[in-house]
Amino acid sequence: MKPLSTLAQEYINFLNTASKVELMQLKGIGEKMADYILELRDTSPLKSLNDLEKIGLSSKQAGNMFGRTAKGLFD
Image (cartoon, rainbow, N blue to C red; front, side, top):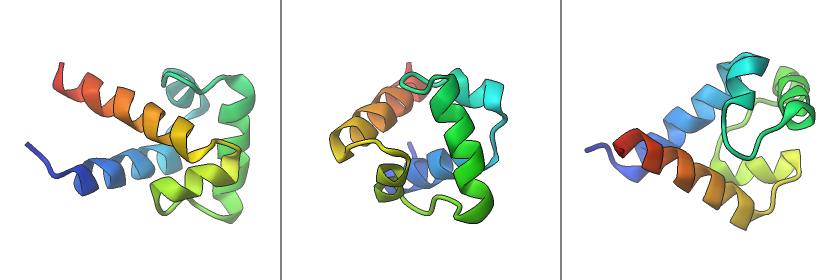
């Protein structure tokens, strides 16, 4: 099992490299949010889960989104 920090970094890496379609497959990310992530990462790639607040997610929303995604990796 990978440490949580490694999973978080993989999630951030995914957000920084995924296509719009791939982003939209994540729970909590719709078309507008996917477009915004694509636009944002061109100028300032995400570096940590805290950076998700840059895209308008509260820390609770970011944590929940990461938690759901991480849980899906183990199911």
